[in-house]
Image (cartoon, rainbow, N blue to C red; front, top):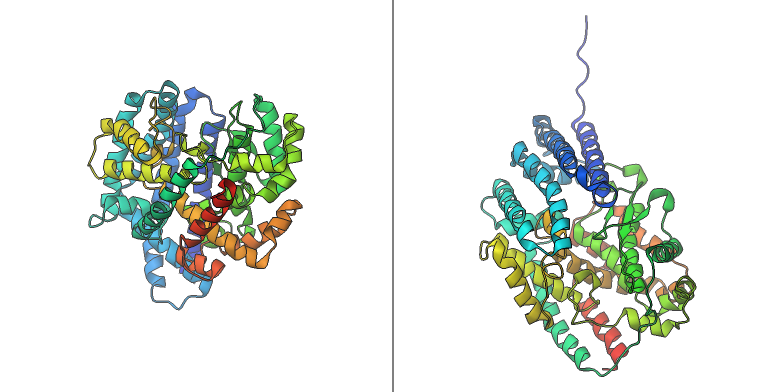
Length: 497
């Protein structure tokens, strides 16, 4: 007499499904990387449909009725710690995705993919009017999606939770208030200072020269070339899991140090991915915590390593060799930390005024998403706020509201750049209790720094919520106090305040 095969345990089934979802997400990421780095322009229509198909399959696998059954079965079970992480993360993903119709998911993904090429062309032509219709469509689609997820909540908060699920937007607004209180007067004092810094590399440098320089810099930092690569893109980014974390940068002929800092920033993102557990690939324990935590790693490497005097004592000879220069370390250190309140481009902004760029974007998109302004009012609102916050006004759309690609992928993500900077300063302060960070950097010994971050942040994956991870790593909740103290001390010394 035949016997029925044993039922698959809900934990094992859920783990298998989580892995399949992660693999599909990573495949989509690789296709998106190709679209922004190597794909010919004519490939955009096909790529949009490919990504749409993958997102639809992913959505169907996540919202499968079986997944709901497994989750319900585990709701009252006494789970081990690792199983609780799996349950918590898949429960949240399932509950949000199950409320969104599959056809909306496919339409949104295809529209986002097509929008990237539209944005790139619009930026090249400095023509916001050509991008406005697709941006309007994206806003409407995201509002529709947010309404399905939670029609009782502020749609903008629902969107924010996509990238930062365990940090309330209200907390982020409190951080913004603290930064406004302290950074605005600090920036005013710096602008009033008569301190001037020279430009150590004032020539023009071709792309090959800058690429060779950037490759050597991240090579010294410890980038794993067996699990990544460095290319160029109109807007630098990192994509990929722990086995294939790819980084991009971009070059301006007269700004080689800007390319170096951009590359170090993306290295920080890749270092997070490389620090995730190999044996948990596909499981929440092998995935990064959130956008804000991810940004803390890039901002840590960019600012708390790459913008230190110790780093330039080590790296200046490398730069001089590639650029045929004779700058001294202090000169380069001052140059990379010079404030540029008149700068209009976020990715070229200095460490302090950068946050005014973030607040500006958050204000504009909240007004647009909330219906307070129409799409054709965005350029004017953007330019007015830039004049209010930074004292400058964009001359065209390319250096104004078209400079960032982010709206092609969604809304409510810019806040995480500031969250990352605040957390990076908090991690740096904690790390310095354990390590002689400046001494290690000065000697080019970056391994202990990578290992500390892996132990305290990367290796946990999604074991902890954001607040729990911050407390686990630093011993206290997320606070802007360390960033404020760091900024006032560093720039006070640089500018002789």
